[in-house]
Length: 444
Image (cartoon, rainbow, N blue to C red):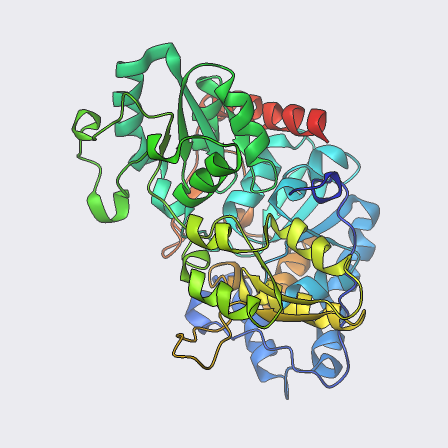
């Protein structure tokens, strides 16, 4: 059950600290994955004797501290819980905030004095911040190629042909709920149809509200969060219809060929998160038999969520563990970097944490702590370089995030809306985001 403290505009510090002689194990990106402006920083980083804080911190200080002195209180550093543990630690070390996607989206609008916002996470998160930001605030991402595999299954060009069919069929009776893991253009679709954005922490609140509107609900893009939310609300799971995944089934299919679409209580876009679909009910039972509590993220499959002892957002998972008494043992099913940081911090209060998939017996496959690879494209050279280039007034425009931007995760080719197009998109996306905030705050 999500608690009010797990849906917060003011994320509490993680408490994670960098300890001496512990390697900063962020994997090095190939040099050709850096923009030209960032290559000098990457070369310096790679040339360091090792990755311990004793070497990395002085190097980072030489770039980050001058930037902080230059921008003063107008600078805000942000990171998501799933970022490589080293970035999470570094961002907090330099006074930044670490949070889940709900709290991150609101940081610009809730901190109007912050004029330069630098995010180490994925592009859709930075775009959500930019959508709600004031006109005098700039949002920058340390690596524009940091995307989301789930968001890549619901690009606007994939959704548009299906959107046209759905609107033609249902008209004003269509309502879209857009998960935060979507571009601003998909969030705008939710706004245009009278729908709302949701996150894993408030999906049940938003879908419950949507049901009261007596419309055909389309949940984009995570079918598993949609199904788990429906089950949590007591909806008839047999009346959920999953639409094809565009990555594998293309976008040429017709909605009239989908069985049960008219009787469906909710349509689920066929997207998913590869990090969270590795978990199995057998893994859950394995830990429970050892008297460990199992907590999972609701992007996992329905069978895993129903077998677990609890499920919820990253904030829920963190708080549930950190608020537990000494001696408690948890197996946590979510992104690997997050679990490693949680394990480290929980140890300080006498709580034991393991990754749900970290099993080495009984014939159950061991996959280990799978991390979000695209999130980890934001590394120390990107953080140092972004802040130094901003200080010098030489930051590449590609790293500036405006609402409506789309960036190819491989080539970094950006498509930017025109001023008028962006104004309309922001208006629609804001409606959906603000409706989510209103629903969430009313419940909290």
